[in-house]
Length: 79
Image (tube, rainbow, N blue to C red; front, top):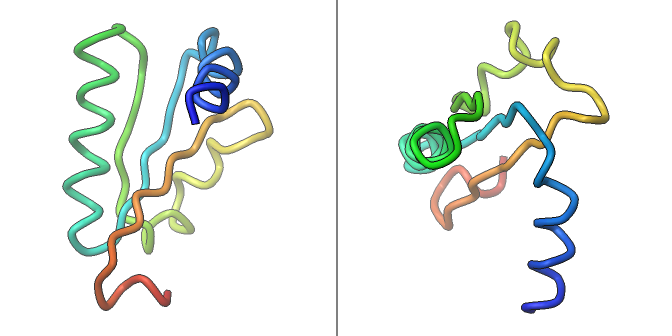
């Protein structure tokens, strides 16, 4: 687990933008995750509700954009 974490950190360390996605209870978590990145590293990050991704923010995503999906075990999990 620690080795995998270090590997992922190396991939992300030079990124300047992040997107966090969440649905239901995951949406406030996505907002909080984006806020923490901003507070700690002064890097741009946004949180979006997963269902709204297709209405504009998806245009920001390319192969260099890290996207974190916060998946909670609730009714939204199957979607």
